[in-house]
Length: 231
Image (cartoon, rainbow, N blue to C red; front, side):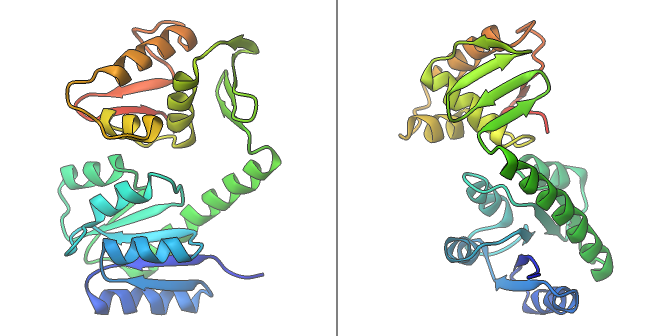
């Protein structure tokens, strides 16, 4: 059985090579990139199952790269950083990373975390194969084929835009999307500062799917950042 492919992104050649040696010894396929721009090009041409992503890099740093990757990909991302402050960790995780490792790190610990994330990811993917069209969130069911939304088995009518927003957040559980990012992904056009269209649509979705829209169970507000559905 062929092992998973891991993309290692770091501007320090020695670190890339060190991680590659440990991953290859475990039988993984390894791809290497020196910055975020290189990583995005590699992702266009290759199937990757997990990304080890440094934060501080030239051209495109890890935070920006993570946001770009999360626009349409959901493989696990483990952030690397020489900084250990809590805010750096929070920033990394709220942009869509699954785990965070501080430099200098023990390569064996990194490999252990990679294995853990891959087990979870591959298990979820195998479950998705059974029925990829159904997204289940507690009592909320979203059928992406029929565009049906149900709460505890009872159908809820959403407009196409409302459905697209809900699907975007539900498909990317745990990832915080800014108003700008939601607008650009759903409306497929540039965001304008003055528009409150997304907030209006979020409010309407909550009115339809939440038992109490003032205390939402499904679509959470991350103040000053955006919206997410809990993982």
